Length: 315
Image: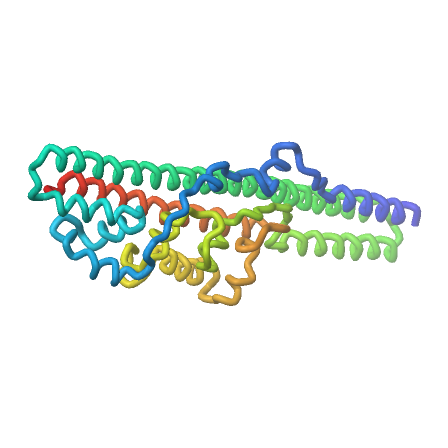
């Protein structure tokens, strides 16, 4: 019986060794902090009034259609540069020196507004890239924790099995031998069940400034400039006909990330201010952040096309 008690003591000590030290090192603490990716440029975003009625913008600026596509005119609207473009169109037949000087001034004004818009896009892109890198690093951290956990479980299972075999050889009493075998079987089953825990370890991960939440709610943005938000939310500027970049991305998230359930999506931690994340949650967040970056890249493309058309326009 002494040997039997020693076996159970050994088993208890071995199982205790499976406990994981959850204290973060300094790098992980920094990554998990709420302000890790906060940007300084948000307070400098230009406040402009943008006409949200695309139909009225297009209807009231037909004189620009010989020079610009409908999308270009809406980009002008987003830049708050429709007034300058209309004045350029009026200068077409004016050959005076004053008109030529004014032409140069107007072109410069529009280009300055484009430069400002590009700086706002760069600010958003920098924060998105930071959040993407942050999520990837946390994924690596949690995956490493889970891998170590599984390795410890298998190692413990091997020790228990070996101890049970050794005890079976040493213990002559059949009842005691059976007790050891049953105990080892129960312990092995318990360890096997632990490996089936698909969620694995969790980490505290916070993001009070949550770009994904702005995309999800579609309400007045907290983290985007008026220009960027208009470009994201205007249906006629989307890559899919009849859908804004925001709408298209939200639908994709519901289908691809949340198996078609809007209710499950609404409850997801990725749209909150953060909390206890599993590796699966982190993978979801990382994927969604990359998709947001693709949407922002689409705005870059729209601006590039507009600049090409502006330079080709013969006013």
